[in-house]
Image (cartoon, rainbow, N blue to C red; front, top):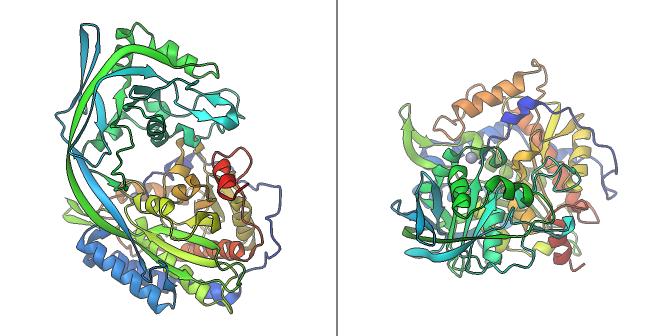
Length: 556
Ligand SMILES: [Zn+2]
């Protein structure tokens, strides 16, 4: 997992028993017992132990640890009797990665007439190029303030108002426009328009030379120090165009520097920011020009997604897919902490990866395969920016228009059964109904993410499916642990985040309790089974930012 999703649960949203439509479709019976029973704690633990063993060297992409991880998963899928998931007859999908390290001597020079201001790399500006090239530069590029840089037809919002920013440097605000009208931009919840990655995609779409986001701690959700963590080697996919259609330079500047630059431009940052929160906002040319050169050190890495498939039993539906994902990668071998340098990632995400094997066992134990086909996709390089799932989503092995849904697992509950299930991004799609009904069969309830403003829905592998239009489900275990004090779930989670999250100590623990994990996997099994049996594909809710993409994809 690439986030601290659980911390916010301290806020403790009330359990949510969303009313409304019973999930569509007619086949809402429990999964045949043979399938549920095939998911066992013993087997799950055994698989996690293999995946989190020191011999797998922390499962770093492009390392010997990857070779071993991929070999293990492939052997397991084969032994379970699943078909190779790649139509080329293999269980692998190659994912070409590049590691790009910018030279920290870069600086951003902004001038107006004879006056110029130099922003220091890391202190004042964190910038990079995703071009797979030795260097990228902007020279005398005209700077334009484009507000939030949002074009959202469903909210009748357009920050560009037809202005051509080709070759220019976009200065842009982070997060969604902060409107008091809660029917817009998801209210308190962050929409994809608020994510920093969206801002750079807007730069690419408009042919901008550079995109500089003004960092503000509150709307970003983290301090500038987190941005400064991006000054070392960053991984990306090697696209056929070597990312050359992206803006040559992408980055962040500090709020202080933005304020100073706006002053240099004879503008007031606060005033323009306030204007940007209105529909009438139009881009403001700043009369400043920006120059910067970034030199790169490049390293290519060949990594892999591992993929297996269970072919559906209905001739009319077997070309349609339910895709389960979990990232197999973690951080490999790195800086030692307390003498341990192997980042085993037992919870994050050996547990999710082992879940794919458990689900495969469950589906194989059905009296007959489900009607639609099931894909088990263990993706690489999640910890490097959701890259393996991104690669699959733009280079899918089966058409996305034939992909009914994605269900992603990133970290299991290892502290015991819970009365509830947290659905991240609840309200996005009809998948809510599926998981609500499946939870109900277990005597459990679903609850929403208590911190929707942090945009967690956009931070694990399911998001790449959503972004390409495929409804995607990401749930986390609940917090009300059966037979424990009310605050137990939160406390155990906080302990994990403080002690083990992204540290070498994320190991298999003697005190793990697996029955909650087993119950959660059975829940995902039920949801996937229903999806594989149901007549219609699940839909995005009206107003969701991915609905239009799906509608186009399905030719509507
Ligand atoms: Zn992680």
